[in-house]
Length: 183
Image (cartoon, rainbow, N blue to C red; front, side, top):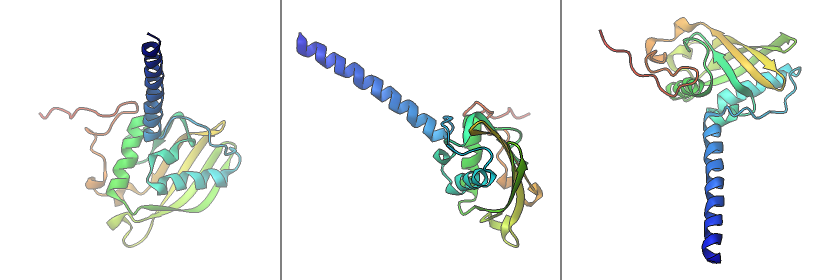
């Protein structure tokens, strides 16, 4: 009887450990578990470099610690603000379309908890064949994490093949959206 109870206790403990491990893996996969990065909001250059480094890594887990829970991102190609799985979809879509993409810091400015990052991007295929794409990220820092980022650039340089299909683009809290019915 003692051996059986001990095996059951071990099985319950192993099940709890497995549940925690799966939960951590899911949070890391989407890179938005809200862990704190240790960056000070007033250190604009470090925030700018951390954001560009996460984009350049092409790895969702590198956003962990930068974005607060519910942190948002939007630019001319995202069809509005995105967060969580919807944001993960946008980043993965962009990285698959442009696996050689690279952002370079040009200038950092801002005031209070706002960081303004002027950047150039290369490795975007025909979009940057003649000259790098220039843009701006406006990063809003709240406490010790990024609350939101608005990207701005000349979206007319991107063709329709580089825009996520609106019927497939997840909403802020969704992994998938069903395709719109054809009329």
